[in-house]
Amino acid sequence: MPHSKQAAKRMKQNAKSRLSNRAAKSALRTAVKKFKQTVEAGDGEAVAAAYKVVQKRADNSARKGVIAKGTAARMKSRLLKSVKRAGKA
Image 1 (cartoon, rainbow, N blue to C red):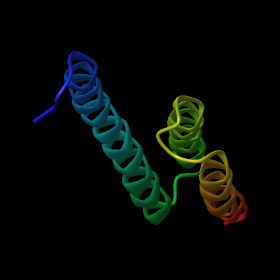
Image 2 (cartoon, rainbow, N blue to C red):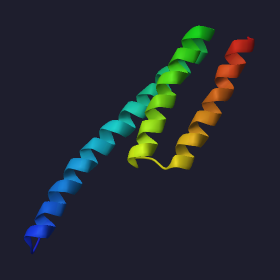
Image 3 (tube, helix red, strand yellow):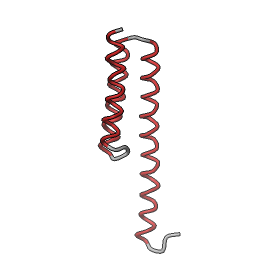
């Protein structure tokens, strides 16, 4: 238990941000999963659209500090390779 009002408030803030971060990470992982399913299906335009969703979620998560900026960049870079391969196929 917190010993001061300040510590009690910090606990509430941490709990709130933990829920928010968990939701953001889950949404990002879901978007990536849907993107990979779209790549498997092989529709080039759908792949590009799914990539845009992943890109937006990754950038937002990085901006808010949910994931690191480099992690978002690495994720987008790896997925972009799939977009390019789907466009050629």
